[in-house]
Image (cartoon, rainbow over all chains, first blue to last red):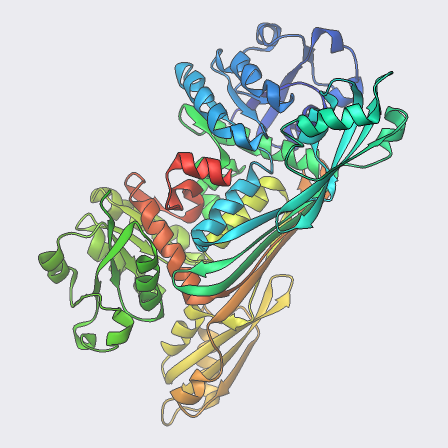
Length: 307
Length: 307
């Protein structure tokens, strides 16, 4: 069987780990990375010998049309970047993580995907993403109850990117600290631009929707080197639900993981890329997808091995 | 919106809890229980004022055709009992739990379901069932690794039913005890028929495929009253996987639950009954079903609330 041709849009953390996850998947090949023209030639080692291109048009000219593109740029660019590929009928997978805007992006992507007879899987990381699937399953198993999703301690990629996008902040790392009951505080280390005070940076951060809802601590460090020593990519989650199945109370479940964050996100995107090639045109979140479609095995094998 | 009309086949443990779980679901109504003619009039309290019938034909005559039937009889009768309803175009959900025979029952039910333009969801309990979904998700998140599923301590309904079906055993309870690494021992309490020795019963149990693969302890008790004091319906599972996402090792996940066993099984069957009304004809295991279809809410609400 021929391999699924996957390309990657962007070569940040997720782009880099996506290349690795595609390499690890025996049914896929990475046909190229599309990057900003100004980035071409940089971070060669992260490419792992995959060819780089400054546009999807260039990639198609050189390699033919890929089956799927993994969108590895910040969430706020997801819709525009998905659209670049969908218009060529290339399936897309993004890890859009602005929870409040997911219904809206689903609706917009649904339209573009269907117009181009392609599949777009959105919000496909671990939260939103695989955690969403767990939440749906917990709800199906115990319809009465409340699920607490406790993140961390760990660096939030979405929050870090959001902090870096704030005016006056040169570089930033945002650490999520669980407070129990699904509440979290944010500890943001920032490298300030010249002439910007810590107080100003903190105010701007607190006004951002990513940070507006949680207790916030902001600390300044001298430069990106010092910032890099603050936190590695380990992260985790503890999901808890107690509730009732039917009329029976005291049902208790937990899901817990301790993980390398971008590695898991990228692996999930790769599994969703596989699913994308098996779905009919439209936009999907992970709760819309039969789990068997993520797997590098046929249905019969999956039923035998996993059911 | 009109409610989903559900009937229940059998009034054992699962039948009884299924009636409760249907009652708790605001989008469903229980239109009747189909029981052996010899059981009609017994265990009235378990019926919770639902009408009982001695055949699906009688139920249809009195109440019209139900949308779905929950098959609440032992696994070994699942295919025959599913077929009774599928032939009328009534969707079925069973909790068939003989893992090694699932590929075969899927194939057989697929044929019958499609012939009758109905949906059959099989192996829909917690293991196989929701645990299968978790196993598939863990595999999608960490393709390299081994998942250990550690059951118990708790009474296995499937193993207890299998023990009771053994010649010379009047009544039995089988307790599953986790040994770590996905291994278990079985502790079976039996009420022997007159003239049958414990040694004979143990030999017969050990020859049964349900018990052939694990360390087995068998103890005799005097009667069913003493047996009932051995173990309640609490059960649980600890699923563990450590492995690699892409090329990154040391990813660790666990799923753990402590639950009332028949209550959870029945709730999952009810959630699958809802899914059955939203799927196209054919046979499904839970890894074949988009999780959103289990939920008593529309997709838009589910995306907003759970993704």
